[in-house]
Image (cartoon, rainbow, N blue to C red; front, side, top):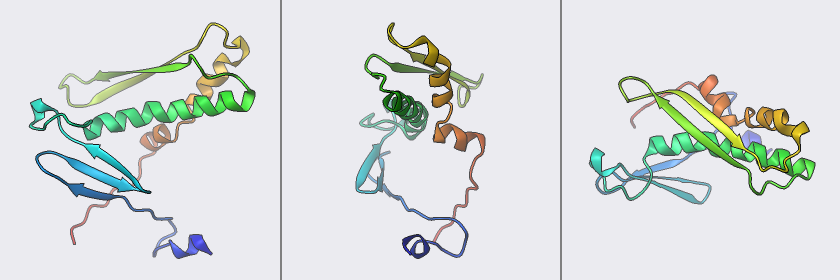
Length: 143
């Protein structure tokens, strides 16, 4: 069976992302035929040619919630046009960490009132958010 073929010596499924280091502060990731480019800001010694990795991390939260909102609407035949999510980040006093993330779902005037609480519940199903709340184990090695 396919799932058995990708199991290692654990009970976990495994997938791999290849990270390559480029010139300057550029670091790219490849997974499933997609390339994700990152760089650091000019202030941090990069060229500012691509989002910083932490920016992509933050974007993954909002876009994940957006997928769940979109799916919620599709399943109910509600047009998703005009819906947008505004994600706000509140940094700690040192400015080096996020203490709070707020996600506001802006709905068009014709959005059905009876679904407003349910669309919030759908956004809260975000897989990225769930992983932050229950983080994976991190193991870093050198070969």
